[in-house]
Each structure stands twice: as C-alpha cells, then as structure tokens.
Image (cartoon, rainbow, N blue to C red; front, top):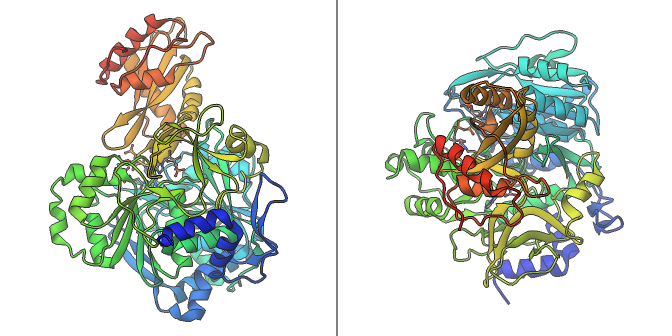
Length: 635
Ligand code: COA
Ligand code: AMP
C-alpha cells in the first residue's frame, strides 16, 4: 500500500469510473447518472451522462439546508475603496434566488447565454450563481479587455442578457464600464435584449429604457426563483481564452463533472474543510476566479474571499498579510507575479511582522512558471508549504500538483510535482513517441481527461479537435513543453505556441500581430514575449513599415501601443515596439520568432539552419539594444 496520493492516483487511472463515481457521492443529484464515463462519442468524452443536478443548489442551498445558513459564504474586502462586508449562506441564497427571479422575469431561461462584465465585488458571484440556478450559461469577460474583445465574445455566444457593474476600480483610475459596454454592443452584430447594471457609487451609469435595467430595482421587484435541474452534461459556463488567433476559444464547462471534480479538489488538493476561509487572489474574469473564487470553495461549504486590490500599492506590500490575518485565511492561491511584486517592494518581508498569520497553512501558486527564487523567498518568509501547481483554463483544475490533502511530497523547486489523480501525463516527441525521463517534449495527457475539463469549445467541435486532439491522437495537447524526471516530477518549461503569460494573464501574440497589421503604416510585424522580472513576460512588437513611410519610430511605437490597448485592452501591457527593415525568416518564409526571443532574452541560440538571410540578425540585435534589451552572438 502506498500513501493516500498513490492509492488515489492508481485507482483514478486504473478504474476511472469507480474513482469519480465515489467522488460524485459528495454532490446532490436530482437524478443519478446512467453512465459515469460516456465513451460513445470518443474522442469527445462526457461524464455522468443521464444525471441531473443544479450547481447553484450544490454551492448555496444545500449548505443552508445542512446547517450552514449563518456561516459566512463570501468575504468582500476592497483596499481600493475601503469597503468590507460579509454575506452568509442564507443571505447568498436570498440574493441569488431573487436575482435569478429578476433575470427570469426578463426572459432568461435554461440554455440562454448571459455575459457578465464585472469587477471584483460580491455581486459578480451572485450573478454567476443566479445563471447557474436558472440553467443559463454565463460567460464572464475580464474587465481589462477592450470593447472590441467584448464584441467578439458577444457575437460568438449571442447572449440574451449582459450583466455589468457601472464601473471597475483600478488603483489609478475608475473605469466606467457602461460606455465600454455600449461601444461593444454597437460593434457586435448580435444585440442582447437587456443590459442589467449594478450601480456602484464611484461612477453611476446612465441607463436607457427599455434595454437597460437597474440591478437593485429589478431584484427588489422579483420573486425568488428555485433551482432548475439541468443535465450533468449541460453547459454551466463558457470562458473565452486566448488561442493562436484574434478569435478567442470558448472553453465550455459542464455542470456535473465540474461540480464533482471541484468539490473533490478542495479537500484532496488544497486540504480545505467546510467552514474554513480560502482565498484565491485572482479575478472572476479568469479560470482561477471561476474555479476557486466562486465554485470550488462554495461547493465545499467553505468561505471565499472577494478581494478588490493588488498585491502592492493598495496601500502597500503588506496588504496580503493584512487580509490573511484579518479574515482567518487558511490558504492563499495566487500567481507568482504577485509574489515577485511583494518581494521587490519588501524584500525582507518587514510588513509580515505586523500581522498574526498563525491560522495560515499553505500558499498555492499557478498561472505561469514559477521561478525557484520566488518560491524559495515565499517559503523562507511564510514558513508554510509553498505549492506550485500547473493547470489551464481548459482543464479547470490542476493537471499537476503536490496534493496537500492526500500526501505532501518533498518539493523540487521549478516543478509542480506529480500529476494530480485523474491525469495521465506523458512527454512526446514530434513523432508521437514517448521520450526518456529528463528529455524535453510536448506535455500531453492521455484521453479521456478527468471530469471538470473542457468537453469541447462553444459551437466549435471541429476547432476543439484541431486545437487539442489532432496533433497527438489519443492525447490532449496542453500546448506546454517540458519533461518528467526520474522521480515522476513534471517540469513545465514553455509554451509550444504563441501564447504568452503576462503577469499571470494569458495572451495571444498572434492576436496582437493582427492588431498591429491593421496599422496603416505597417507592412509586416511580429510580436514575441520577452522575459520581465516582475510580470514573467511582456510583449514586444517588431514592425516593418510600408515603402515611403517616414514617420519617426517613436511615433509608430506610440501608435502601436495605443492600438493594442484600444483593441485588446490595458491588460495586454503592450508598451514596446521596434521598427526594423526586415524580419528574420526561414527560406520558406516563416518568421523566426523563437530566435528573436532568445536574442532579446540574452540566451544562447544557434543560428537556424533554415534562415534565409543571417545578415538580418545584426539589425534585430541593434534594435533590441536600442530599447535596453541585451544581446548575445550565436554559438
Ligand atoms: N479592469 C481594467 N483594467 C485592468 C484590470 C481590470 N480588471 N486589471 C488590470 N487592468 C489594467 C491595469 O490598470 C493596467 O493598466 P495601466 O497600463 O493603465 O497601468 C494594466 O491593465 C496591466 O495591469 P496589471 O497586469 O494588473 O499590471 P500592474 O502593472 O498594474 O500590476 C502586478 C502588476 C504584478 C501587481 C499585477 O499584475 C498583479 O497583481 N498580478 C497578479 C495577477 C493575477 O492574479 N493573475 C491571475 C492568474 S492566477
Ligand atoms: P491559463 O489558461 O490562463 O490558466 O494559462 C495556462 C497556461 O499558463 C499553461 O498552459 C502554462 O503555460 C501556464 N501555467 C499555468 N500554471 C503553470 C505552472 N504552475 N507552471 C508553469 N506554467 C504554468
């Protein structure tokens, strides 16, 4: 007999149906499933086919019925506005059922899509849960995206309703959402029937009848709505994430497998018990916000934190410790970039001395590769396990983790440890052969994936197949490259596509290239991610100008930055552009982005054998030097 992790892992691979059927006993079903793992349409698999449940019932109502009515479900803490508050499970049930009633009264029913454009306030969770209660499919769009991105999502999922707050608040500005929303709806071909606005005092929105509705007014007038049972395989939400083009991928999450996997993960991976306070310092617009600000902790009957602030500057690098101490947080989950920011401002962790962190048990990091120095610093100052875990929007929960609730393995810095139960992770070469331990290759997961992972992309089965299943038949392609060592530890090193991670935010350089290509003076362009001490990576654009254009390079750079901010949003953090005469390419015309990235990051690189004209590289080096990026001659 091995330890609890080894036992769970072996069963999860050898008898998937038995493993997840047992986990599913923790969920309240209105109808038991017919088949745990439905392989009838492989390689598209479904979990718990024939079963029926309601996710909102499992996240809210059941806890009220089972004795947690007066327990706090949500703690809201905004160092930006100074506001704080709590919502008990009974209050949450009341708010969610009334808002669901209000949405239903305006025509939202099971299967309808509802876009949410919301900041980090408790009402964001209320809106998500109200959709789940009705069987409507929510799609949350991150507040840092520009109207154009919102319009793309409106056209793709065709929402009947959009729910928004009147504003988001960043440390340096109040962002009125309504004008952005109006512009997005103007740009989109599809028009929602209604826009519901939650008015915040910092910037009230102007509402135009009959389309626009005030949240408070319609909720006050509404009858509470009961939970609507849905099929386990019905979609709970769509979350758009960056693909390799400007058209984002609509990752679909089902109801049944999602509820089972997330509730199980709260104990097995995070070691969180009902009643404890769990804090994922992310945003509801990202998958971490969906899984571990909203659904996971609430399915577990725990207390979740909604934090509207930043790790530094709101007001200082001690804000995370203040929140942990003040609200009895036992586990924090955030992105490594947040810790790099804290470490930079307060290297000796002086702020920690002010706070009583005795209840704090563990720190989980994900969203980007965590550099060993940051983990070591966090371990040294916090003196609790610091756990790197690896997952994606598509997977909804960890592919690899040191499962704190099962067994804590010795940590190897730079590795998210072992595959989580349910995940059969392999490393393949270009010919689909498994490589030796220690050898780098494509990180793939043997199908079927465990419950809670994406069954497909919204209205795009063929794209799903092409993007994830086609390259390595029988496996899911993660898009990450890395290796597995002799002890079975996984190392995630880099993306194999053009996705970059900027401050834990996933962005597509392909999408940025599409924007730059739209600049009237730009003939050709390439965007790469270059290493950044704080954000992990930041985008950098190379543009070649059309013949006869003499605009100064600084002016072009300014316009390119404005264009990306306007089309994609401030979250892209696109600031740097260099103007060059030509881009380095292979003889077949492929731009050598990898080589440019290595030069920019001052890494060793080999002159690509297929390069068309090596004489171009010195100009690239010079251009990079001109913006302060180092260079190294090829070996
Ligand atoms: N709405 C509108 N704008 C937003 C936004 C939102 N929800 N979130 C970020 N932005 C804007 C910021 O205001 C900033 O705009 P600016 O260029 O005008 O300053 C830009 O997008 C980039 O923001 P951000 O990525 O937050 O960078 P920053 O320089 O302001 O702060 C960090 C740096 C490291 C402190 C910050 O990135 C951070 O806290 N990262 C953690 C990320 C995280 O939790 N990721 C989730 C994955 S788990
Ligand atoms: P997202 O879909 O935004 O969660 O981004 C997923 C991507 O972030 C992954 O495919 C990885 O490239 C990267 N990522 C997430 N977590 C980790 C981790 N712990 N280590 C290395 N890379 C990670």
